[in-house]
Length: 139
Image (cartoon, rainbow, N blue to C red):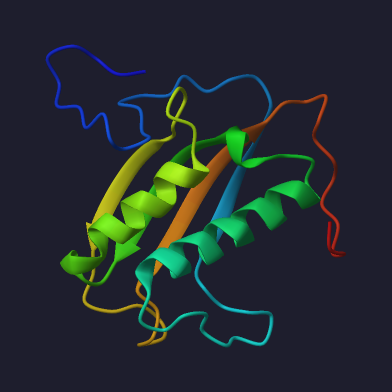
């Protein structure tokens, strides 16, 4: 939800607040643009790295029966101001404008690998009827 009288960027899929729906709350580890072998995807492209991080979030949620639509909150850690437009454009294409998650952005000096430009943490709430117990196998 957005609130009148509070800043609002209509170009950015986000909510000022999300009322948590019924379901299983899932806290995801920060996701970055790593392959399964810890190779960095697109080392100098924050937009592609954002898509890769969201792809990883979707894989984790799918393993539990959820989707990207179940994300209620994200924190994005980014390294360079010049990448914000690319990061936001990637988010625009992946998150719903009608029910975008609550979002916090934090500029950091560096991430765990110097080639990484963004890390996304997420909290999702998967409806009880969709939730599957965790599996160590790919979805």
